[in-house]
Length: 244
Image (cartoon, rainbow, N blue to C red; front, side, top):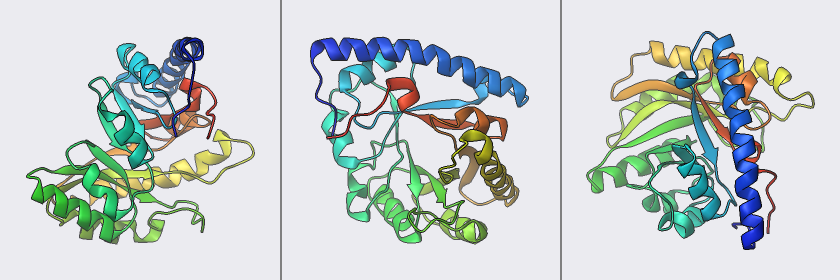
């Protein structure tokens, strides 16, 4: 659920965002240069789970061009009040909720089964549109996480790229939580980047493999250093989340 905030709390959240946004942009730019790229080469996705709509709209007015939501119901509760902005779905997705995203989500980043990809394609065709997707990779092979195993991602990408109504754009992943944060995760980021490069080399049909969505609030700089070109940042922008 979205945080229930008073006017004063909302204004404080906006100020927190303003301060954090500058820091995040600086860190992205610094990591981009160190990796031989420009800040323009890295896309910043603001992860807006539990964030009040007025704070999201403030972020959009301040320069955020891309937002991501984890829960379909929460997105639907915000949708009509949001300012124009590119929207990606980044959370676990059940097939019976795909219908709410077709035509609304520019990209669904968390495609973790063939069945889900098929449903996205079916409903996209039904609605005379195409939907961009990323394949979620369970890079740490964790039982608690969804996603394709690293060793099957090439085979699955071939199969999924043939589904009508979708366009495969790349991969996303969430590495295991490491005690020393980003530095330890760089090993996982390197593995993800190799998969990304290998996927690009396949020359898949109906695909433009240009997106490696890896790195969040605690490790986005390290992810960029290892090749990520999209980072999904929530608490580092909006402050610590409060859950209800």
